Image (cartoon, rainbow, N blue to C red; front, side, top):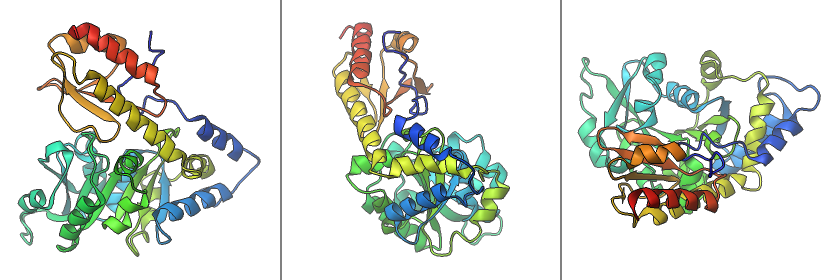
Length: 345
């Protein structure tokens, strides 16, 4: 293909950053203690504390769904529920894993642009004290959201204040936390404890890793049960050093930031390039590394022939284009040219 095999379907489709591969290879020397008692995992733990604060406890896992399930299990009992945006990954794209493995209900709250607010939560937090109803216990937000938008630290803090004032906890699904931090011009840590987050899932896979996620506990005492929860959830790596090495590569010298900044910039370039094309409408703010748009009739299928991407909403025809750390300006410009040909722009 003209675009060299690049796709706009997902940042999961991108390869592994060379520095991450090099870190994995560097960890592959001799023998090392298993299950996280090795020096590489120790260095990753130190880096997590550097970014998220001295009290942060990181528990490395294999994938994003595992990170969400493990983190939420430390916060919930089976008769309690999670309030989250109706578009949230835990509500739509995890095949019911949180509900199956936690025995807890996930309540999707209609949220414009994927973002919750205290007002939306007020309307959803019903049945408190009623023995016939699941009890609201956790608010879960995605950062960046599944619609490509971002919560500012102040917006997170407002949700945390709402939740904590009702004896609830705040969970953050940070599969694209790096992209959000870059978009907001803040540090990773600014989107954690200072914003009132109790537990977060920190994603690396979409930002240049081979496969590495972590549950980061920020609430004092919140990590006591995590070693057992992680093991029982089948998310404890025996050769932990090879997963941990990926975090060492990303969190040292801010590779996480460079990768996310480039992906965000490519999404901005893409949005600017298609904005004036006939019949193309961008339907959500472009804040991180995602672009959502509607296209003229007949264009979507033709464009997908050359550039794979997802139809986000089959009912409305909204499509999603994701930018990854390894897209080039040439990739983006070629995509825009092809869409211009198809739309007559």
